[in-house]
Image 1 (tube, rainbow, N blue to C red):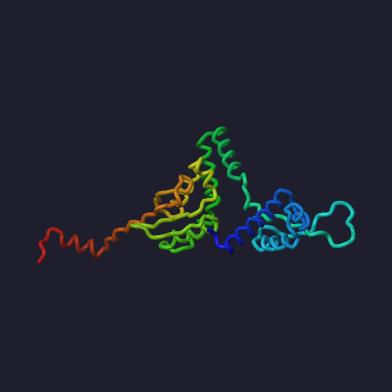
Image 2: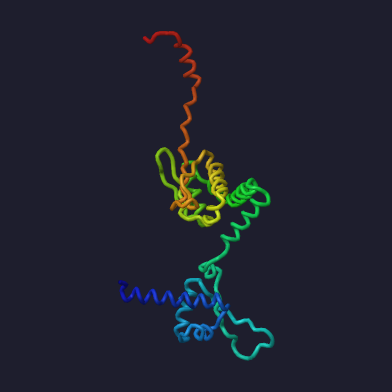
Length: 242
């Protein structure tokens, strides 16, 4: 059973969502418009709007006037911000999946793979700069930070005989579920950026909780044979040790 304060907080959030939804459905609205539609007092509406403005869900602006402007101060309306619109259901995933499906049907699966590679190559320019600016032992961490800045919430951690790059969020997971070429192209670019073979162990698109990529530790190079060593070896060849 919820505590009274939790019930109050839940009710406040529910009403706040109704205010935002009303603006989504009806467009920029005045306080009076919202109060009339939702059956709330104007004071209550203002309180919820203040909170939504603080959360960058709505913004206040002057009401657009068509025709001759009357005397007096223009009415203030509240409209959703881009952030506020993103909080509601969008069709971007469906649009992207439909576009990928059209490419596959019209130009073949190879074209889908080509598109996926072209997309990630362009996106990865910032990743390349970050990786190249880091010392070799910090390049996986640099790549993780660059991915995080791009919305992937990535981390790097040590693993047996190597490292793991973990992406805790994938902005294209729903599309990649249908078109794994997106994941394959991303894995290829990670390998190119880090200069080593990498192995994708798990993906969010496949139903795993995290996208995990294994980066093996570079094999140590054998020490170069110096002239002294070579000469010593040659001079002692065939002789028994003293």
